[in-house]
Length: 96
Image 1 (tube, rainbow, N blue to C red):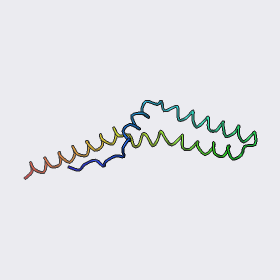
Image 2: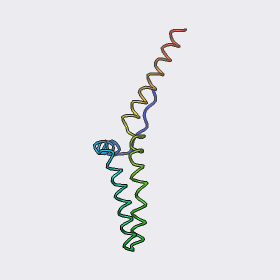
Image 3: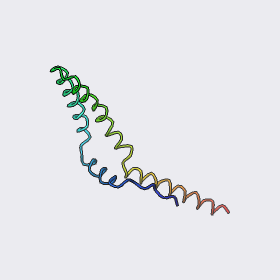
Image 4: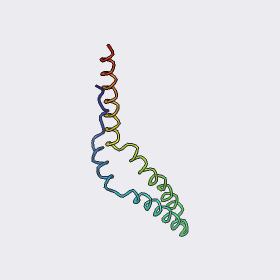
């Protein structure tokens, strides 16, 4: 039986905390970053405008990252693979 890779400490707590957040919050953070960037650009604070604008892709990619790496999905996938291996072993044993 192959073991799941170990996770970094705090990973489970991170995912439990982020699962409670509505996914639309990341959208609104990105929109706020765009508006903040535009505001700073208009008042002449170019460096702040660029800094604020660079957060937009981060806010938009975080929910995708979360969906791809959510522990519950990883564990379920591992269990499905393991069940498939057990079925294969059982059928091989029956054909002998």
